Length: 142
Image (cartoon, rainbow, N blue to C red):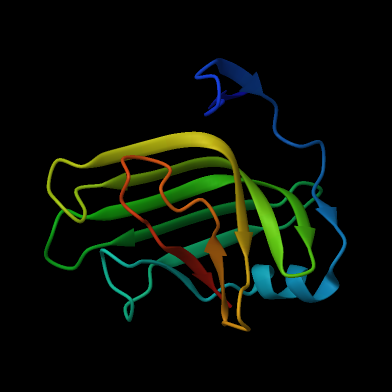
C-alpha cells in the first residue's frame, strides 16, 4: 500500500497500486515505453536523467535526474494507472531535493497527471506548485 495525502483535506489515506494499467492509446503507450529521459528545469533542461519503464499487467516508472557537480536531485517512482491520448496518470512519489536551493525538500505520494501540450516531445507534470509555491516543470521526454 502507498500512502497518499489528499491536498484538499490534508488527510492521510492508503492507496493500493492499480490492479492493472488501463491503456486506451497505443501511441502514448509506445511513447512512454520508449521514454528518453526526465528533466526538472532547476537541474538542467539539456542533460536528461534516466527513465525506466517496466511493462506488465501494471506498468511501473522510475526516473532520476541528478545535478552535475551539485546536490540537486529529482526522483520519481510509481505505477501507471492509465495511459490515454496525450497523457498518463502516475500513482507514486515525486521527490525534489536541494534544488533550486540547498535545503529544499519536496516529497509527495499521490496520483500525478502528465500530459503533452502544444505538440511538445514530452509529457509534462500538470501539478506545478504542489510543494512550496515554486513552479516545478517535471518532463518525461519521448
